[in-house]
Structures are given as C-alpha cells and as structure tokens.
Amino acid sequence: MRLLEERIRKDGEAVNETVLKVGSFINHQVDSAFMDALGRDFAQHFAGKGITKVFTIESSGIAPALMAAKHLNVPMVILKKQTSKILEGNVYQTRVMSFTKGTSYELTLFADYIGKDDRVLLIDDFLANGEAAMGAARLISQAGASLEGIGILIEKSFQKGRSRLEEAGYHVYSQARVARLAEGVIEFLPEDGTDTGE
Ligand code: G4P
Image (cartoon, rainbow, N blue to C red; front, side):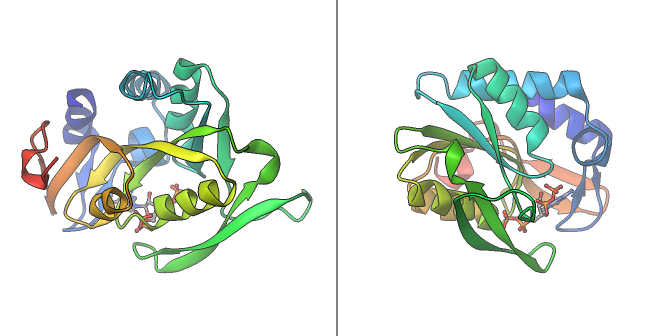
C-alpha cells in the first residue's frame, strides 16, 4: 500500500538492521485520519470474507483495528497481555514469547466476546516472528471460531512471521513490506511481493 510506504519513508526511522521507529504516527502519537484510511484499506481487502469481528492485541493494534471494524461495521475485540484482577469470567489464554522485547506474556481473550460462528479478522501493527499472531490464532481456535485473515500494517519481511503464518494456512495481507533495514535505510518489497512466492 503506497500510502503507508510513503508515510514510513517520510516519518519512519530505521534505527538499525531490525528496528523501525514509527512513534510519530503509529506507536506513540496516532494519526487518526491516516488510521482511518488504513482501516478502510483493510476493510476493502477483506470484504467478502464474512468477517463478524475484528480482533487485535493491545496496544498499538487498537487504532487500525478499530478503524477496520468501523468500515466493516462489526465490533472490535482486544486481546489483553495483562489480565485484569478486577474483571472475572471465562477466558482463553496462551503464552506468547516476544523475541523483539525478550519477554513473554499470557495472551487473554474473554470468552464472552467470541462464539463458534465468528469469522475473525486479526489486525496488528507489526509482524516480526509471528508469535503474537500465532498466539491469537490459538485462542480463536480454542473458541471454535475461524480466523479468516490477518491484516498487518508493517511486515518485516526479513523475519519469519509471514512464512510461519502462511505455513499454518492463514491469509496474510501486509500494507507495507519491509525488505531491509539499516541505520537510515528502509527498503520495501515490490507491491506484488513476487520475491516471497505469493
Ligand atoms: P511477533 O509477535 O511478530 O513475533 O513480534 P515480536 O514479539 O518480536 O514483537 C513484539 C513487540 O515489538 C510488538 O509490540 C511489536 O509491535 C514490536 N515490534 C517488533 N518489531 C518492531 C519494530 O521494528 N519497530 C517497532 N516500533 N516495534 C516493533 P508490543 O509489545 O505488542 O507493543 P505495543 O503493541 O503495546 O506497542
């Protein structure tokens, strides 16, 4: 998606070979009109899949997921990384390891917000090793629902997330696919993604 690539070129910062900073419009400050455009693009891409709910993982996925849900006219559900001590109820849980941050957490989905008939679209900001998305997929599967697609803002195509998700049978659509990072350098894959066998 040209719009996101252009914005990353303008406002993103490649810190090193692995980390891209996009704090001014995605992770810290959020450009709401821009998020609306990204959400519309996700909704158009996944139209016809019969999506009943948009899921995301807190926190940076919430803004684009909400916009996608708005354009698909369905609710958005947030998967939590920290379980609230106040809220009680039936939950689905799975442990997720973050290699980027060197931490792990218990990804939690409240059972009230998913049913066997749900057709879920998962939206997240970054795809690196695919651990978070695989964790979300496990929770959706535990609930007996189906994961119809995974929408990602920024895929780091030099990491193994996409191939893991595709090998597991999931349809992945990334709005920007970063082929290479280096200090001050950001390179994207061509839009048709020919060099990854799509
Ligand atoms: P994975 O799920 O694909 O395996 O990714 P990984 O665990 O490695 O990434 C964990 C966290 O690091 C995620 O944020 C992800 O968005 C973030 N991340 C990964 N690569 C980059 C990068 O190049 N730049 C930035 N800015 N973030 C990156 P999180 O812990 O879920 O945080 P948040 O959603 O609360 O912001």
